[in-house]
Every structure is written in structure tokens, then in C-alpha cells.
Image (tube, rainbow, N blue to C red):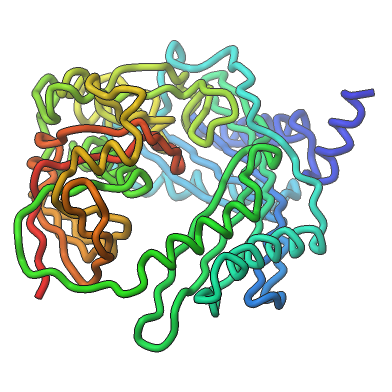
Amino acid sequence: MAADMDTDVRQRYFPHTQDELKQIASDILKHAKALGGTDAATEISEGDGLSVSVRCGEVETIEHNRDKMVGVTVFIGNKRGNASTSDFSSEALKDTVAAAYNIARFTAEDDCAGLAESELLETDPRDLDLYHPWNLSADEAVEIARRAEDAAFATDPQIRNSEGASVSAQHSQFVLATSRGFVGGYPYSRHYVACAPIAGSGRSMQRDDWYSSKRSSTELADPEAVGRYAAERALARIGARGLDTRKVPVLFEAPLAAGILGAFVQAASGGALYRKTSFLTDSLGKPVFAPHIQVVEDPHVPRAMGSAPFDEEGVRTKRRSVVKDGVVEGYFLSTYSARKLKMPTTGNAGGSHNLSLVSSLTRPEDDFKAMLKKLGTGLLLTELMGQGVNYVTGDYSRGASGFWVENGEIQYPVEEITVASTLQEMFHHIVAIGADTIVRGTKHTGSVLIEKMTIAGQ
């Protein structure tokens, strides 16, 4: 009975079964070979989702998306061609394969092009529990969004406006297949509740937001909790001031600290490394972070957003140490970028998987309040604006807002400032990482204390 119910739920969101997608993939690979392709790969995906938003209690948007896509890559020796379609008819699929084949015919030879080696492929992918359908009607989604926004308005009379609250339930599945014998795929889900209230009035208006995102709707934070916390964040920013220019310690709030980890991934990714557009070129085996810093990648955490049994090329993923005691032990490489660097792929075609930024000095009692004490006098950073990161040089300069802290106590909110340093300095001078851990996308970290950065203000 449970299996039947599961099948019914999947059919509600997906027009095809996994077996049907695998048959389509097999037909595509056979056609590519018949045309003269020496190798081929295809990824077939389809998704179904509902997203709603409300603002000041009124429904703003109700969006129901249903999409599907077939991507085909054909190799003629070391020449590669790509094509895609959203039409699953037999004729359209043949035309797409032919288009990819014809593109490959006229592209230049590339010694690094080609599928991943057979021995690297995941032949027995584990179930990571990534699919949890949320059978949500539009009316139910609107009600949940209203609950979040109503809770924000009820927090304080100074919450007088809102940029809205939103709810989303997304269901997707895919199959990846290659002519090297790999075939695999699975369904997955992503759901969230978000709220963005506005506090104050006139020139003193401030906004902030908060969200909860999970594979399973049962693990989402209560919408009231999301709304209240978003409101508390907006209220705390009322009366923000500027700062004059100074060099001080900076504490990155945990959600922003995930961006520090993201900057490392960007600089340590294959494309930037083989093009030599990264300050981390040739950094393998060298100390890049403070000696107490560890970065661990674990693709096999059940239900996690960054989990995957194999990467976008079918290469098996594995748990590994990326940074140990501050020393870089691994990059983020696809098959192509790995060949460019004359290294083995790391199973990161498509990006990183569940990265944790941790410190060997962190204790269980190092919560957010304890991190403020460690900061002492300096800047608590809660929002960053603009892109302001040069990955070639490592220069870092971004618009920011947050709170001025003295003797471990928040004094007042600050805005219209810029924080500046280099990623090299920031990585090397991480003083502490908090136990106030949070997950943002595929990154997991607590708040991060940087020894010193330049604050440019008035």
C-alpha cells in the first residue's frame, strides 16, 4: 500500500517514471551512436512546483511551474557538441541529437574533452532520502504565507509594511546516462517559507528577511517563527548610523559567513584554476587558512540540500577533507578541468556538496553571545551588498550594514559602510568560528570572526 501511495504521489508531479526516462536516455544514446558519435551523454529532467507570495495580507502571485528538458552532448573523438529541447517526442529527440552531432563536427579538437573514465562512475548509487513531496494547494500555501507575515506584523507596531512573505514547494527528477555505461537518476524536492517585513517609517524605514528551506516540509520552521524573527531583525536596524573609517575586528553573522566559504569554492574551482584567474592557483598543499581551520565536504548527508551520490557526469562522490589545519588538500574539479590541470576529477561537476567550515578551537558553548564577547569591540556584519570580490587578486570590498559592538555588547545599528580586505588576509586571520551553526544552501558554518578589516564610512 505504501509503495502504491508513493507511486501515486510521484505521478501527480512527474509525467514520466524513472524507467521511462531511462528508456528515453537509452534511445538518445543509440541514435547518437548510429549517427557516428564516438561517445554521448544525456540528462533528462522534469519538475513541478507551486510558489505563492502575499504582501500586506493580499495575494500578489500564484505561480505553478511544470517544466521538462533534455540535454544532449555528442562527441566525435575529442570534438564536442551540445543541444537541448523541451520536446520529448521521438522526432524532436532525434533532431536534438542530430543538432549536437553536427555542432561537434565543426568544433575544434580539444584533448581534454570527453566523458569521465568508466572506473570513476557510480555504479550503485545510495538513496540519500532527497525526495519529500509537499501536497500543497494554492490556498494552503497562501495561508502559510499569511501566517508568516501576520506574525511579523504582530511582533511590534513599528512593523508597518512588508515586502511580502512567500511559500514554495518544488519537485524535480532527472536521469543521467552516458555511452560509458552509466545510468542513474532520482527525484528530489526543495521547499521554503520566507518573510521580508519593513520596520519604521519615513527615512528611518528598515527591512530585513528570514527564510527556512528544507527537503521535507515537516522540517521547515513554523511560519510564525520565520515571520517573528524577520521582524525582530528589521526592528533592530531602526536608527542605523554611519561610521568613520577605521580598522577593526569583524564578526560575520553565520548566514554571511557561508559566503566566505562560497568565495573559497569559487577560487578553488577548476575553471578559475586552469585559466589562472584565481589567487589560489597552485595552492594545493599550502597554508591558505588559519591553522585551526578545517573544511570538510560530505555529499552523503541524508536530506541535505547539497547531497548527491554522483556528480553531473556520473562520477561517484565521496566524503573528503578539502582544508586540513589551514592547508588546502583539494580543489573542486570536473572531468574537463581536472584534465586541464593534469589531476583526477574530484566529483564536483556541478559544484560543491555539503561543505562545513569548522575550527578545532570551537567549543559547544561558543554560541552567538560568546562570539560577540570574542569580538569585543568591532563590527557585527549582518548584510553585504554588491559583488566586490576580485578572484584574480583576492581583493574584497563590499557595501555592508550591521551593528557596532563594544565590550561584547551590541551598541547600535550601522549602515552605508564598506568593508574591505583581501580574501588571503581574511582566510589567514580567522580568529574563531562559532557553534551557532546554520545551513545556507550547500554551506554549513557558524559565525566567523576576522581579526581585522578596513571599515570605510563617513
